[in-house]
Length: 524
Figure 1 (cartoon, rainbow, N blue to C red):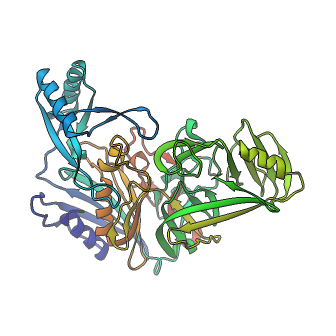
Figure 2 (figure 1 turned 90 degrees about the horizontal axis):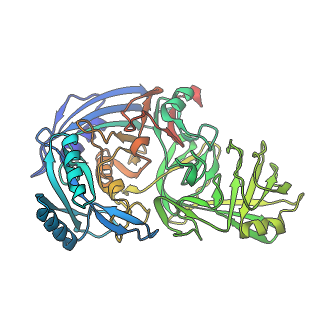
Figure 3 (figure 1 turned 135 degrees about the vertical axis):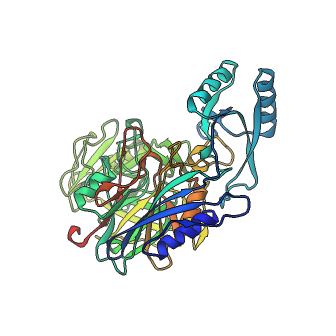
């Protein structure tokens, strides 16, 4: 991150144990102090815990006046913290006329690789309060005067350093460590479990949460991944467009980060049909990114797109009742022979698969999936260079978005991976540009895996990273490739099966979709 954090983090990787380190800051940035503790869990596996402080920084509660807008993607009404100079000046004058004392603040674009640079827009705020209750009281008065408001903690703004960030960093050296590293859904892709409970069951040394997943019944089956997921060499969910993925080859012996796409095709003789999903509800595509999806076939974070013609494959790892509804399904045995054709529902047979189709896909099944016929399914995973990613039994892939570091440089393709929209400042602003809990993964020049978390959403405690700060932090640790995994309330690191960080959900550790587990040899 800033010079102080970078120096402390590099020392943490290079030195087995650390004394508290005071580091020199860049001009105009308060000096940071970082305290580190280091624990070796096994040869080649270390965990470092640090607290980064800027003692001279003071944050307060404030009231942000929001701007109305229309979602470019869905056409729904939205609200944004940032808008044009004209809007900001007009709003500030209206606030003054109503007896308030507003201030107008400039917000700049982070240095993403595919968005504008310079000023993003302006926001309007009122007051600086020592307590949240005082800010809420002021917000109520401003709302009564006809404005839409939100209460904000300035420690989440990028304009000043955070006063505190609690970080956990695990470094796994595959040249020394004789265990394995794997992505896992713990045997059932249609479930949610806490990272620490899976870690405890697997006797894991270190574990972090993995990729994005469905959290609401309205968006599909909870726990199923909304991006590419592969476990034990089997593709269990498809990519949402071209997005970042952590490839754990040979049980974590060969690790890399790449943007991946998936193509899956069903074939009967000379007739083919494109499969657009694996282990998800036909017609519902969380995070979008599939051809033909509406309102977009590009990735859009936390948006559910729809397909009217959709063919979905279900594997034996889908341990729940199959989705029901209009359409048709074909049940296949282990060899791909069609066992039965009929209404959607039931369960995936042991060792078999199920294809469900709606719209044109149902028509294709009707015409081609006769009982006794064989349906061949071809699966292709490729990176952006066109290189094919082959899966063996000890390979796994966990995906999310966006890429943070590429070839040793910060390279965040935030718009391409669908986490911000330069033409709609209401989309992804808080998700990407405000400090949040984050989980990150990367690889250094020696091929070591770096897993990192930062706690957030904790006023008076840890405030988290923006996406750009996450990239700076990973690069400061020596990562030459890195990606952002699922964050927010999902951010978790477990050490020896015990929760090690402080998740942000008020209810405690969140149950997630997949996880990354560092397993000792006897747990293979």
